Image (cartoon, rainbow, N blue to C red; front, side, top):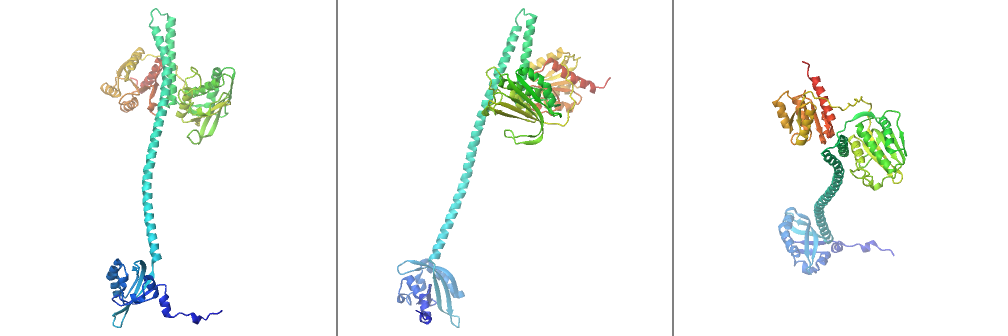
Length: 550
C-alpha cells in the first residue's frame, strides 16, 4: 500500500514540540513564556505550571542560579548570545538533569531586549563520559604515582638485594680465601717443619764433642742440601703467586725440549716411552730457562706417577697463531709457541681440573708429593705472559699445553759464570739491612771474603752515610723490603746522586722485583757465599771500568 508523503508531513509546531532538544522562550527577566513538550517531559511538569509561572533561573540548582545571575544573563545582555553553558535542571520530582544551554536574545529596532530563546541539550551521556574520563584520569594519575613509588621502592629493594648479595659474595670469598690460606699455611708449615727438623738435628749433632771429620762433613752437607730444598720450595710458592723474580732469556723451545729429553727419560724410567715431536723451524720464546725446564719436569713427574711408572708420554712443540679460550679468558689471536705433554695415565676428574693448580692440592698419597709442582707451572706460565690449558678424561690420560709468547729471533746468551769465591781486596761495601741477624752474618761473610764493610739498618741511614763520607764506599749492597724507604727507592736515589756507585739489591720476596723493570742487579735470598762473591765481583768490575787509571 502506497503512502502519500503529503499525509505525513509534520507542521512546524509539531517539529517544535517533538524536537530532541528542549526549547524555552523567556522574557528578559527570565520569565518563561513558551516551552516545548520535550522540555516539559524532562522536567515532569505541565505546561500551565511552567509557562507564565516560572523563571528559567527557578529551574536551576542553587549554584547554577548564582552563575546565571553573575555570568549567563550579563553575557547574554552584552553580546546577545551564549553557547554551551552547563546547567543542572531540577525537575518536579527533585531530580537533576544535566543540560547544555545555548541562548540567543531577540531585540527590537531600538536595541532593547524582547525575548530570550534558549535551546537545551540533554548532557546526561556527556556528563557521564566526562565523569568517567575524570575518574580514568584520576586513576591513571594514581597509577602513575603508584608506579613511581614502586620504582622508587624497587630501586631501593634492588640496591638492598645487590648489597646483601655482594655482602654474601664477599663473605664467601673471604671464607674461600681463609680456607686457601689455611691450606697454604698448613702445607708450608708441614714442609718447612720437615726441613727444619733436618737442619736442627744436624746442628745438634755438630755440637757433640769428638765428632769425626767424616760425620761433620755429612751433617754440614745435610744442612746445605736442606737449605737448597727450602729455597726451591719458596721459589715454587713465589712462582705460583707470580712474585718470582724471573731471569728471561730468548731460546728455542724445541731445542730446550730436545736437550731436556735425556733427563726426562732418566726421571721416568725404562717402562715409560718418551716420544717427542719437534718443529723443523726454530720456535723462540723469552722466558726463564730454568723455570721452563722445571715446569716441564713437574708435569712429566706428575704424568709418570699417574701412569704408575708404565705408559707413554708425548711431548710436542709447535708454533700456534691462536691461543684457545681458557677459564674466564677469551681466545687470543697472536704468535705463540705451544708445548704439550700428553700421558696415558689415569686422568683427572672434571671436578678437580680447576683445583690442580692450587698450592698443596694433590691427589697423591701422603708423602708422595708436595702439591706445588703444578702451582709452579701455573705461576711461571702466567708470569711469562702465557696460559696453561689442561684436557683430561678419567682412564684415558691427560694433556697439559703451555702457550708462551713467541719472539722473532734469539739473542746471544752469556755463558754462566762458575761460582767461586774471590778476595775482595779491601773493597768497601755499604750494607743496608734492617734484620740484625742477617746484617751481622753478611758483614762477617764479606770480611771473610776480604771486603771492608759498613752496616746501616735503613735506607735513610744509608743516604746519610753516603753524604757524610763521600767516596768512602765502593759498592752499596741493600735489602729490598725494609720499613720506610724500600731498597728500589734507595737504589734510584743512589743512582741519581752517585751515578758511578755500583749497587746490588737482594731479596727473598718483592712485588717490585717480580714485576721487573727496576734495572738493578739482583741477588735472590737465600744465596750462597759463592753467589754473593760473584755478584760483588761483577759490581767491582763495573767500578773499575768507570774509575780512570791513575
